[in-house]
Image (cartoon, rainbow, N blue to C red):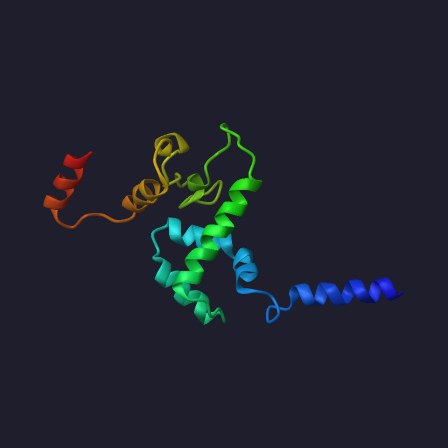
Amino acid sequence: MEQKNVSERLRALAMDDKRRPETARLRDVFNDVEAALTAGISQADVLAELHKSGYTMTMASFKSALQRIRKERSKNQPTNPGAKSATTTVGAAPEGSGVEETSPAADDLSGLDKKQRRERLGDQFIKPINPLLKQIKEHKK
């Protein structure tokens, strides 16, 4: 009986957000944070939303925590060259909806760094209003 009580108390501690470090709580919502950042939402806007949910971390501690979590996750993920990239699901329509996927295929993003992938994904949703900007952008490619 004593072991059951200890187990229940430990589980209660693990679920108590007030006692858990903010980085541990950030790990719980990390996939959503990364999805927002990949979609082009600024770190400041993401942090503002986290503040609304009770987080108190500064921008510097937020960036540091993101780096640590990304590093942890990169160590834990197996390297599989045939695996689909996480960016292929951004903007994807529900299966069977008849709507084509809006994100580029994983092949289109291979060889690009993180910033270039994010910009390529953002370009799908942001249309230049000035034709001159479009010409400049095409000239850079």
